[in-house]
Amino acid sequence: MANPQFWNGKRVLLTGHTGFKGSWLGLWLADMGAEVSGLSLEPDTDPSLFRLLNGGQDVEPCDIRDRTAVSARVLASRPEIVLHLAAQPLVRAGYRDPLATYETNVQGTANLLDALRIAPDLRAVVVVTTDKVYENPETGRPFVETDPLGGHDPYSASKAAAEIVTASYRSSFFAARRVGLATARAGNVIGGGDWAEDRLIPDAVRAWGSGQVLDVRRPGAVRPWQHVLEPLNGYLMMAERLWTEPDFASSLNFGPDSHSAATVGDVLQRARSTFGQGDVLLGDGSAGPHEAGYLMLDSARATATLGYRPCWSLDETVKRTMAWYRAQASGVPARQLCLGDIADYRQGLATDLREAV
Image: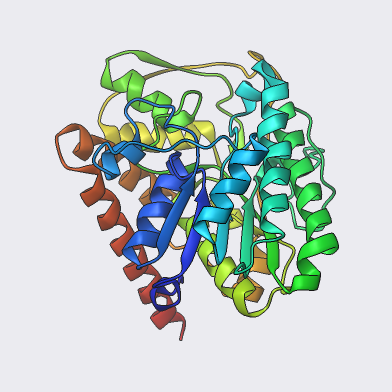
């Protein structure tokens, strides 16, 4: 698991720190004693997990598409470790505005890496992409890191392109400096505090909380569902290893066990059972633009190289997520809920490790 002693006092630049995953990761890093600097736009949801965790504090926005601003933020933060999460993260938003998606996910990544190649104290960089970077022939087989990259839709293609940009900077600049630079590919994350549009659990919470029917486009689609803390733990472990072994990996998958594959409908059934109410209208999969039918990741390489393993089952993940939303809606502070989940997750990992030994 992530080592709190390692992170204590480390200067970390976290891009996308106002987003869903970035808010969780920033809280976890600060709780371990890291000195965290952020690079992100203003939160784009209301409510916003970032604002709930940070007392509504103002954000000094920095657009990753702005090369000059990115360079200035890197210079000011003097990072030792960079965790790059800033992105346009939604498939359907990529269809609506493909150019902005490419500008953010491809050019933005290049802007960051170009600024970092002269950062004097830098030791490790983890660039977060997605399970959707792979060319997907819909074979029903989990993807491994050596599978071909691809991208049917603009979002997926932009993330595959970000992988290529990262590989180029690694071989051209970072390897010679002995700075670890790798990509992390994770699947569909769920957890409390996500209020983004066009995501399954946030859409369900909004609809069911207001007594509306949830319209589900593709109930049979299979995704690598996992709690948000699972891949975040993987990113942290990856950065720790890159610190001491900069060439140990170029990319790693972080996903649930393959037997935990579940459809959208399966997840919704679990979520509704925990939430206690909610009507669903199931589509036939024909509505909207193309989206993959089957996506799963093989995390064997992360297990072999890092000792990474998922902690929470799908049932536990969904129960905790829905309980988070219900508790937050009843007045329990988001910070208390998130820190509680982090503590429980670390305890669960520690128990699993003891039982394995």
